[in-house]
Image (tube, rainbow, N blue to C red; front, side, top):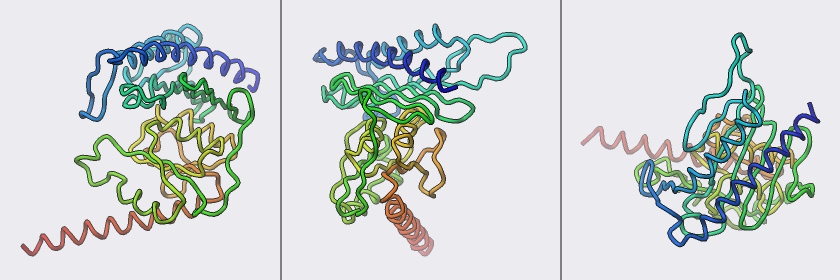
Length: 289
């Protein structure tokens, strides 16, 4: 199994780097190609998202024809099947540009993210930033690396000396569940909070010790399938907001160096209780009008 995963990882690396070449070409284009919008004006998709995903899917289908593939732009792709074949257990989650807003503005904080989940377990993860040529990789049980050098999470125990990273959902203009309250709460508890614009890279930065923790709401499997494995294999911890181990189906996740995880969960859960109480009070006040 270990040998097979290493072989799969090497193929995934080559595919991610090939997609990265497409993105490097695209970011040199002053207009970043044609830009359309998905859920809202803050949720762009470029022609390079589509080109990158088409390349990745084509290469994965060549190398792993029986595997399922789920892409951010194209959804679930058909895979080769045989009559009487067992159910598909291998599923690739593809993010052709994680950080499209950054890409569309020429900010070099974006990446290609490929995560392979086997029988529900994240097993291979590759995150590649073509602008910095940083390649984060992991296989389950095989550790995590940055450009082939083993990485590990920060040893910091004290939240006030900790750097956190977060992001905000695309519906933040219209939904009260927008992470603003959590952001404000953490700003008074930690050294600093950053918003970089790429969930996959955020997770990798926790994995290599650049940040002590990361949290975000309303994520998709393609955002985190690679990153949660890389953090875990680097010695970190990834859960949902309740503290249960995170899966690729989790929408709200917390990642940390383990040491500050309880403190992060405490802030998030206390803040959620306050938010729920405030919303209930608004409803009760409205009942009397």
